[in-house]
Length: 281
Image (cartoon, rainbow, N blue to C red; front, side, top):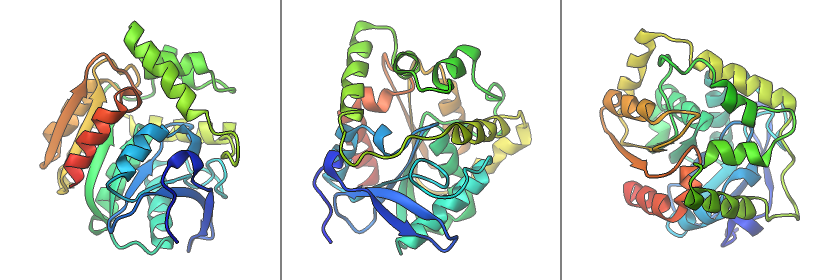
């Protein structure tokens, strides 16, 4: 079956994996080695910017999915990054795909690192957007103003703008445009994520961020080519963590996008997609 040309109209699909979970996913584009997207904190299928996904899918098959317990996928959201990685591996296996590229965003970038360590042969290349290594000092939970903005029981668009975009007029305008694209789909939309998912994911984030200098050395075992990217003003995962990762992963390259925060990849969607496409080529 051929995939639709654009993410905004791609149907929700379901695949049952060997772990007994029914995974919700969408895919667009075509190609032999697909790019699998790993979503941010509390995000579902709707929270990927269609402009970014469609630009990526012009050159490659792109697959977005809800991991275990998230939105329309069955099961209970785990509270460790390692289990999220194993659940993602089970999803990829259910699609009978031998090798993939990964783009992990925020908590999804932690999952991507873990997949690269647990199942290195599954991966060709890895993109880490707004990322930090396990055990990095300063990553044990997010600043009160950050978790207060994005961690409320009911998602807050203004809080999203405060964390994902800077206060500059250009960044805020880009934020409102991105929100319009992200929430434009009204037919066959994904289910919202639950409070239980929020709690489990934040537990996993805090566990990942317990200071542990020895744990930093783990990513030295990632031998894949890795592209690390962030905004220069990300309040959620500071760009100095990207530089730290780039110094620890042997084949890493890095780019920091200007006047941008956690949502740099949506604000600079075309530029980021071009950079990722070039990296994956």
